[in-house]
Amino acid sequence: MVVTRGDVERAAARIGAHVRRTPVLQDTPELALKMEFMQHGGSFKARGAFNRMLAAGDLPEAGVIAASGGNHGVGVAYAARVLGVRAEIFVPEICAPVKVEGLRALGARVTQTGAIFAEAYEASAKRAAETGALEIHAYEHPDVVAGQGTAGLELLEQTGGVDTVLVAVGGGGFVAGVAAALDGAATVVAVEPALSPTLHDALANGGPVRVQVGGVAADALGASLVGKAAFDTVVAAGVRSVLVAEDAIVEARRHLWRTYRVATEHSGATAMAALTSGVYVPEPGERVAVFVCGANTDPSTLV
Image 1 (spheres, rainbow, N blue to C red):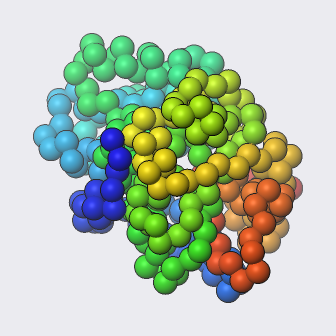
Image 2 (image 1 turned 135 degrees about the horizontal axis):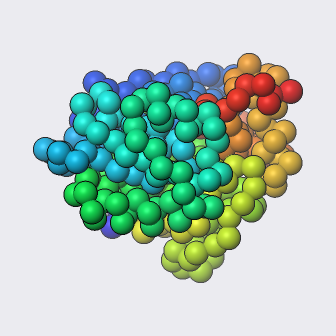
């Protein structure tokens, strides 16, 4: 299923009262940073969570359930608290402690299980079948994808238009939503850790394929299989993927802190890494926008 701009526009109308319109920093005439790390919960994930819940209508007494590397869970937990429903979140063992603490602070029931996201998801799916809770997948459901895409609509309005947008990728929901929102108004480039090439390998193979995942951003970008709705949408939009090395991600995170005093987790700096490492080199005068997302980190690790 391909998510469309119309889907994203309907999502924007549905969730507008519940999410922040995150600012854009126009650093130079050619570089804009969309500060999505300032969204509720520290990432774009609250957008998709709200849209999935509100589009579902009456929510079950058992509430909602999700598997997450951390940020999606925080977004779901935040939306559930605002809407007054229970939230149960399953996270893998690699989930950062700051994210686990954030989930509990939001009132979610947290179960930490499995080495990677896929294993936490299996446990959450089993629990959802037992309880009847509404499952909110991190990137597979079209309502989640459309919700994430509302950040792309904001970007267009705030910048007046750009040529290229760089988006970090895990399971593909965010980049698919942004691509649907832009609807050809700009080129969308997916940026992935070289150790977690989920979308990159799917594009090379003509469909989602399971990959090994790892690296410094694996807690947030560690989906081993791209979502089908996300894949169909990025293919329709002509999105291409570039890979960035581990040291490039680490250095981009430091760059964001040194240059802008922005404290992000490694996933939040991954899109910027494409620029700072030279993996993506803009043409002269090309207007580039970078999504900076993922603020659930320990600031003491920044140097």
